[in-house]
Length: 532
Image (cartoon, rainbow, N blue to C red):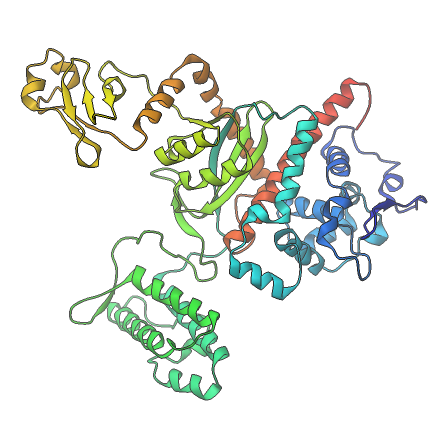
């Protein structure tokens, strides 16, 4: 077992009867099986020294970070919690073999894993420093866990599986939120409770009691569930909604002077909850707003998860994981996590911060005009599936950006108007011999010239070429990679909040890459006549 210290990582010279290899000597694992592959690749890619900067040089020696990282990957893969993972480590010889730890060193408290996650996210377990980093807005790109992910890519380069010149593909998959979706009544009630709690921590008890006395309802400090009423009675529902909205208005006025960050955050959330779900009539009657507000907050427990769609019929609530995949090896080269309601193209800049292939294929959602222009400036061309251009497709209309005109295939010219709108006169179109194919209605052909129009045309023409048509057909390979990633990361989030969900996704990407590297390593050793 490799024992970590602040000075160096060393292996014990003397083995004991509890070492996994000796315990399993009478019933060895099958060569090339998952435990053997995982143990071998982790010994190579995840040594203790990789985590050296996460620990100080003082105090007692910590639990091996390589052990904790392996344990964390396995518990996410198997969907178990901290306590269950430690039980597996204690009672399952295969887990001890994969983690390379003898039995006497398996006894640890579950909070050890919690503190290790803090180190992976923030690089420290100091609460004051963590609070400062959160207030400044930490990006996962800067977290230590991202360095571990980058290490798997460096190993892949050394093994000849990755190259900066290889084209890659980008796609997304949905991640279900860990918190329950709450209805309007529960959202408002829990939002009020949070304001009352934060305000009580910021002021004297007498001041809090004065504010509570002005509220219509008294359950905010005694019950965490929404008030019990006859939910079949429309008048009872309307009365409760009116009470909650009135109490929200009272708290927004009474607590406005409190300057603590907790109170300000709770008030902002309460104001957002009321605005998104409630409307007040001219008579002052509160009622639930019809329809769903854009970017609606659907939980107070996890205020960052959102409603999203993968298609017109497939809805979910949670987050999206955006992945860049190298198709030939199936390795993940970049990962980003966004709220479920966010547009896919918003993740493109974060993906390109982690990888810069010459060609990046994906859906049209990742290839907006601004995203493509920014990518080209970084040396990456984003290609999307493009239908064959018909003789009268917009791309066959000559564009003169200097003169701000567009000329049709028949030679007629029209100016580019406000908002990029182009309108050919109906009289001109009806007299044209191409009218039947170009403008069957005879009302005049219209076009919209968007931002970076010429760049978009050039990239669409490139995507129609036979060379890149073959590349864009590799989407099925990417879907397989996403399926393997979900096997490691899980379809459902384990933690509340975007940052911790992103940690889970990066750990899933690390596990996926280690698994792919381990398979390649095992095949190469088998061909060389060795065993992993």
